[in-house]
Structure formats: C-alpha cells, structure tokens
Image (cartoon, rainbow, N blue to C red; front, side):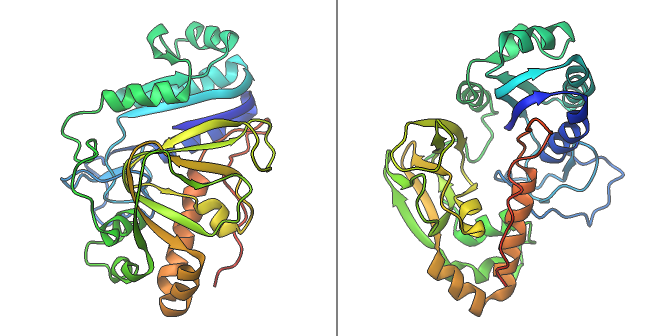
Length: 315
C-alpha cells in the first residue's frame, strides 16, 4: 500500500519509481547471490523459503519475505498529476509489476486523474476503488488460499519468530531470542483502542493475529477528541505505533482493533531495560524502524517521502 499526496509532476518521478520498487518484493532472479539479506519485512513469510529481491533487482530487506502479489496506489490525498508523472512513473511501474505477475489497483482517484491514467494506459476501469480500504479488501479476498496467515485462527507465532522475520535475522539468531523477555503478550478484543491521537507514545506493538485500523484527525491537528479519518489497515506480522515511540513525540495517529487481536507490546520501561541489558537488540530494532519509515511512501508537493521522521539517539 503506497500513499501519495499533493501534486505529482515530472519532479516526482524518480522518487516514486525508487520508493515503490524498493517496497515491492519479487522472486529473486537466478543470478542473484545467495548471501543477500534483508533487514525489514512488513508482512509474514510463506511457509516455504522463497528468495526475494526488490522490484528493481536490488537486495530486499528480509530474506524471508513473501513475493508481493498486489500493490495499492492510494491517491486519496493527491490533488493533481501531469502526464509526465503518469507515463514516467506509473505506466513504467505497471509494466514492471505486470511482468512479475503483480496486480496494481488504484484508490481514491479524482475524476480528472482517473481520466489521465486511463488515457495513458496506466489502468483499466476495473482497477479503481473508491477508498484504500476497499482496494485492500479486494486484495485480501483474492490472495491465494495457500497463505498460512490469511485465516485469523491459525497458530500464533511466538515473539522471537516475529522478531526474527521482522529484523531479517537468520533462524539461529540470538538477537531475536533476546527480545522474548522484553515483550508482553496481550489479547485485545475487537473495538479496543491501542492509543489515541495526542497521547504520549508509551508503547509499540508487534501484531501476531488480527487486523488494526489506524486513523488521524480529519483536520490534520494533533488534538484530543477531534473527528478522525482512516489511514490504513495494519495486518498480521506488522509493527505499529513505533514512529511516535522512537521519535518520542505525541501520537499523530490513533489505532483500534478491527477484530480480536494478539499483540506483543513493548513499553517504554521495557525498552529502557532492553537498552541496558541487550543493547545490540535495541539498536537493531531502532535501525529496522528507521528503514521501515524510509520505505513508507507519501509524496508531497515536492515529492517528499513521508515517514522520514528524525529519530532521537537511543544509544
């Protein structure tokens, strides 16, 4: 799910191409080296080990990632786009993805932008969805049945396995095992809030089961009890709440369980203890989060990528 914002023009092309290609995983080509490793994974691995790389052929960020099958281009906050961006970025990405068997869909597209995408053969009529949520639901319902994690009643993996995948560590990594004592397993009922806008960031979470929706204030402020608009759905084996936690700023978003969830919670106190007891793990977690934030794409008027929040020194 890639979210864009503002006016997309020729100056945005390079960053759009680079950002999306780094966030899409494909089966590794035969000439790729066996020792390439990744350091970030936003989704779970498949039961079988499938070597992957980024769409542009560079090393991916986790050797255990599953190949991407769907890409959602979220235009909900895009005010306009010129033909150069349509052809120079999105048409090229469409062709790259099509060659790899990846389905690309678009969400929240304004009529004039939709017309431009259709005119330049970037999308077909059936590729458009009113909202990102609708597009994501389409992708979820069309995922192959072989996916181990598509059913919510499957076995919940221990936190060390989630950390191992998330950090791109080998199976025998000691770092992942070191994190077991610092996370607390919590069962969350549907509808329960994890945190609200403007709250102090006292925890972040690894999602082992279920789905979580994140929202922000409709007016863009960081104030209590304002009307909210939905941002995205967080799926199993993802991390959430980490941006505010590591930047140590008031929360810009809220998070709520869409269904019964199992999470592993890391509190501020637990993280401070980890820094003293397991400094290598705390540094590794921080570095992985920085990479995650760099891969989260939102294009502003100057083609700025959202998520590149300055992280305070946690050493």
